[in-house]
Structure formats: structure tokens, C-alpha cells
Length: 153
Image (cartoon, rainbow, N blue to C red; front, side):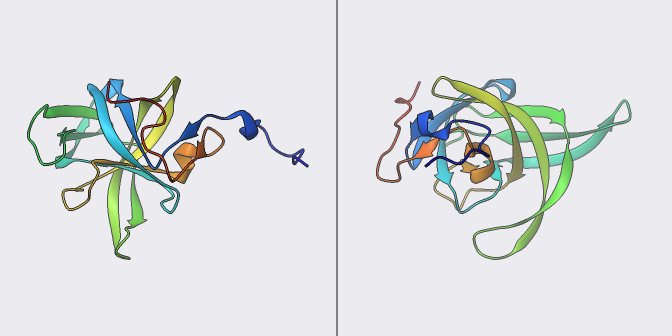
């Protein structure tokens, strides 16, 4: 029996696999491979050369994104408003204070605003991590499948 306290009908939500292609159009990233990770609360994006600064009394952050793992292909430099600095415990158990940004994400035929923490993910297998807050009430997860929402654009 379905709970009456649910605000969305998750039973009709689309499936995603353990890895998916997503787009970040406001960051000029047409496609990036993301790992779906329900063990992570927040989502993370690989960024390098992260610099905080102020413009017109507004906190901003500038950083480089290279969406292709193990390559410098497609390097993009981005400047966006800084939402906050947030303390995040990484998979190795260490706490790190990371910049947080908000941007539009596209996955399959769904799009929504997403908060991303910025960090160096060179040692990780994916440039982006989609945490459970990003997936909650939007998707069902099939951990045995990949790219359920489509092949690389």
C-alpha cells in the first residue's frame, strides 16, 4: 500500500542505472559521465583551479572543468555565483570544506536545478557524482544497468 504522505508518485518515476550521461548547459558542458551514488548525500563535480572572488559585492567562484576523464579535451572555464562553503565528508572519511554552486542538470528527458560541491576528483573514476538528494523523488535506480537514460549525446 502506497504511503499517502508522498508528495510525488515515485512508482511512475523513470529508472537510471549506476552511471548515466548528464548535461550541465549553464556550465557549457554538453555531456559528462556521472556515477549515481545513493551513499553520497550531495552531488560533486570535478573542478580544478578553484578561485573564490567578489564581483559587485557578490561571492563568486571561477574554476576549470574538463569533462572527459584522463584528458584535457573540452576544458571549460566557468564563473558562477558561490552559494556557500560546505563541510563534506568524502568516501575516505576525511572532511573537506568545498564551494557549492547551483546549476541546471539534464538527465534523460528530466531537468532540474542541482547543488554541486566542487572538488578535485582526479583520483576517482567519474568526473561527476549524483548523490541521493539530486535523485530523490525523481528517479528509481537499477544498480545492475548503465546508461538507462541514453547513450552519450
